[in-house]
Image 1 (cartoon, rainbow, N blue to C red):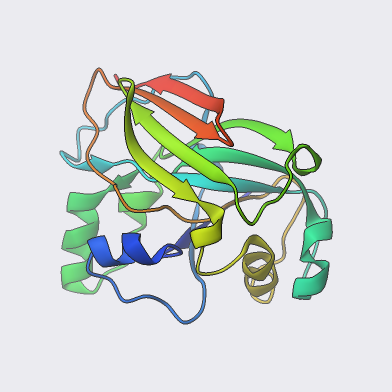
Image 2 (image 1 turned 30 degrees about the vertical axis):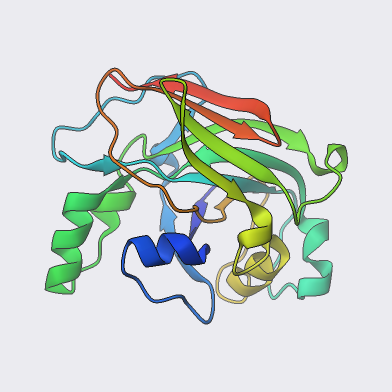
Length: 203
């Protein structure tokens, strides 16, 4: 199982980080050790003082695929969930300044909390799907898949041109604006289509 993350897929988030809006999907990967199951605490690493939350809609791949045409991409997933792409922003910025890869800012242990999944058949549409992150009961990020620069099907088609998708692979589809630092003691809750799908504490 691999974790594929799409960057800069919401224009307002790209702007808040002073990044250019991409003309094609941007992706990177996290190892399976980054996965944090629903309810498990996230232990704030001591190598960073600026861990940012990034709430994202997550797609679970259900069959092997390579060079998938966009019109057939919908056949490669049945379930939709919610997850968080934690980013050590201080480390990422230092790596960017030096022109270095920044996996250590994205791929560290526990950096990919994942919540429950629901069948996409339970949803009226995937193109207008609201999601939200609350911290200590306060709304911090609010997004909707209608604001994606690249749709779920386009992402799957694009990524599969480079990387074979396998059963159980997870695709984090990008975060809306509103990212900020977390702190020890925070309680995070992720909602998809107004349903609570993810809940955990920072320790």
